[in-house]
Image 1 (cartoon, one colour):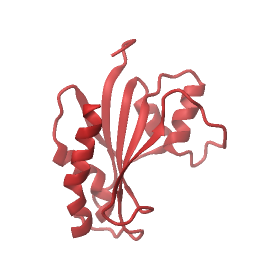
Image 2 (image 1 turned 120 degrees about the vertical axis):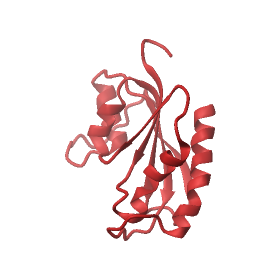
Image 3 (image 1 turned 45 degrees about the horizontal axis):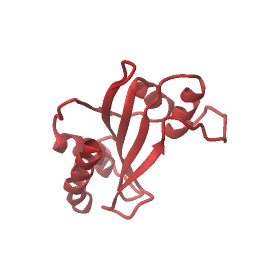
Length: 151
């Protein structure tokens, strides 16, 4: 670690009461505690989550992604911790990557951040539990988290 920053964080986004939207929390629960890594769950993204990531060197956000085929797992870089992409300056509806960029532009120590996206259906009912196809993706997602932590 450098400059007093905390090393690594894995954050699960999602609401377990919305069916497959709870895949992020399911992944971190299956992952379990990891030495030297903070692991926690959150229900809010955007700027509030970006602010919570300040002070870490690296962060991984595990979340449901209706843009991917159901059950597919993809590791995607969100923010490299340095560059501030040009673009929208409007704060309403600010996404996580934009929130990190805004905080970096303000001189805050934001982490290099990746997303581990797990494909889910676009219609997420209010119910507990994952669908079989999304549940089968959890072990693969856990393996991807472990690979990310090893690097």
